[in-house]
Image (spheres, helix red, strand yellow):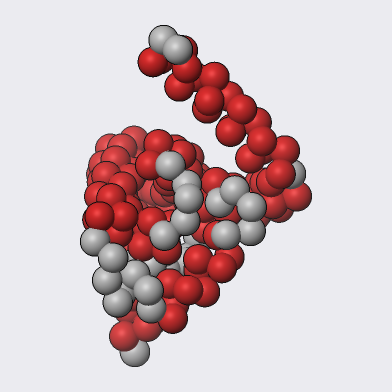
Length: 171
């Protein structure tokens, strides 16, 4: 029972927000709070190594994320519509991903999922079920292409991230 409740609690807030406050207000609020909370948890995981960070579930997620550069894998984790992603920041904190790349992956990956859930919440009120099906299919198509081209995307992000860092730091 608890597992079912944990699945419902995060995406139901986004759907309910879309229904109650409209798409834009709920998207901005849910997205910014989600990104902020995940970055804080990631920083906490980096700072404090505990049994929780080294647990069995974290080890499985860490193994998944450790296949090369974890940037695209993190994007995919945050894009899955009803995936319980509370363990992801802890597992990611044990990888070699930089804090900036982690924040970018949370921001980009969760924006797709939160956009989708808030839009679905708004469309429930108008009984636009075809829109809901289409937006979910588009999410899965995007995830397919991200996974298929993960190596190219990772190298592009790494290369351009280094160039941007040099430009900002003036080196």
